[in-house]
Amino acid sequence: MRRRWSRCVFRFALVAGLSAFAFACSSSSGGAADTALADSGGAGGQGGGVGTGGTVATGGAGVGGIVGNGGATGPGGRTGTPSSGGVTSAGGGGAIGSGGVVVTGGAIGVGGSKDASVVGDGSPPLDGSVRVDGGRAGGAGGGVGTGGRIGTGGRTGSGGATSTGGAPATGGIAGGGGTTGTAGAPGTCIGQALLSSLGKDTVLIGGSMDDATAAKAPFDGRYLYLAGGLFDGSAPCASCTTGCTAGGSTCASAACAWWGCWQDVQAAPGQYVISFVNVNEKASPKQIPMFTYYEELQASGLGEGTAQVAALNDAAVLTRYLADWRFVLQKIGTHPALLHIEPDFWGYVEQINSDPHAVPAKVTTANSTDCAGYDNSAAGVAKCMIHMVRVYAPSAKVGLHASAWGTNYDVFGNTNAKLDVVAEAKKMATFLTALGAGDGDFIVSDPSDRDAGYYQVTQNRNTWWDDTNATLPNFHQAFTWTKALAEAMNLPIIFWQIPVGNMSLDNTNLHYKDNRLDYFYAHMDEVVAAHIVGLYFGAGATGPTTPETDGGNFVAKTTAYRSVGGAKICP
Image 1 (cartoon, rainbow, N blue to C red):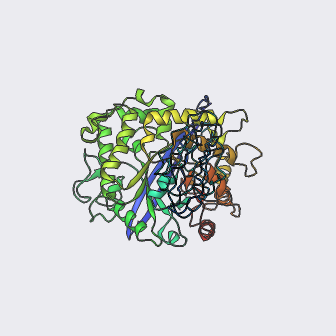
Image 2: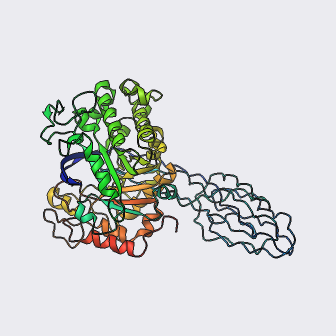
Image 3: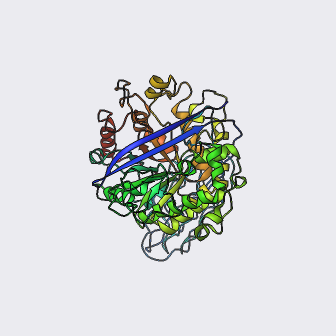
């Protein structure tokens, strides 16, 4: 069974004093299900550090630990030969995955747990979808301090349980005091590297909002669509006022479809992106801009789904598309940003063929400069787009979109208790890996594109998630999918375009009910456990609730969240 809908957004945005129009349309579809993927164990935690020098008591021998189900431990670390004089300080115990290796005297590096869980993506179609992956590696084996006798053995913290299967990685060599044992439990902090690169350590909070709302709470960032269509030539326009058209319409009036002229047309094309970067960076606290690039459908000029995917094999269309992507990246330059590539689109690719290498695309013809070494397929398009980020916007982080309906089951809307959610996550992971998503920094997914109250009132559709988690669909099902997907890909998840509504609203235009925002804020422990590192809220169409029409709930919840320090990704 299959269903399809579209989500469209027509926005009038004021960015750094420049008015601009933005039109974005994103659609979804659904189809069939599959099997689950077993996860593998990750690398063990760090070896403990020994205090320096001092009088020796008897040297201590390392005690071998036992790994939880998910990787065998090697022998524990041995102490080196003690030096004379003084007593060394005792190592503090660190957290490792359940049953990980402990070395007597020395702090153990963070180990961690790995789960078979799930992640979700794009708009919801009819059935369900899930995917699973191996655990993320824990900290590397560390060095023991020199000399001295080892203090009391560090005891393990409460690391998470590992999933079954998976061989551990080998621990590192300790410093001049002995060697660490092998392996341990896989790590839990899949999003740590991403957040650290952004100067963060807690779940990010952001949204699609105006400047005034963004200034009312300590948001981590804002997102903006780049959508609507492309310039008509083979390369971006040099001027918005002279010879620039999009879809046959002049861009001199600031009303053309190409985002490059969504600004004061006297400014050079691309100022729209530059201004959004600037307004985020000037915020207090500084915010991170996020761009949702949703152009392939409009660039193709065709219907969504099979037709738009076929346009990848049109060299003229793909040439303009990749030239525009390069132009976006050049305008971002060296500034930090989050780049979200093509919601819905990859889900359609997956439904056409679960092997993206079998979906033809004129990649090398369209962009021989950046894409010469890539496959002439949908996978080549995705991998080249990620590669271009590294070349033209090296401080930006990038992720593809994972549609929870891409495997032909709408996991987020699933009501069948027999659905193997983890198996569906495995299928999604397999597809995304083949697509090249592993070259990115995160995966994006969306729980729903509009408030449940909006769908209920305007379309007589039930898209509610049970916040008691007693019946399906519910939050725990979605978290199972996201967790498994994250662990299968070894990449964190960003939930995007989450409905803004709350239960105090009256289900009228711009004031529709939904329970997702309030649930996420009230259950940040579940968010973290599902490897979700960012929650970005916004309306997916004109009519649903926005941060400006929700009665101040989004601002209040964010303020309260930050007042207690946020939710640590690695608690």
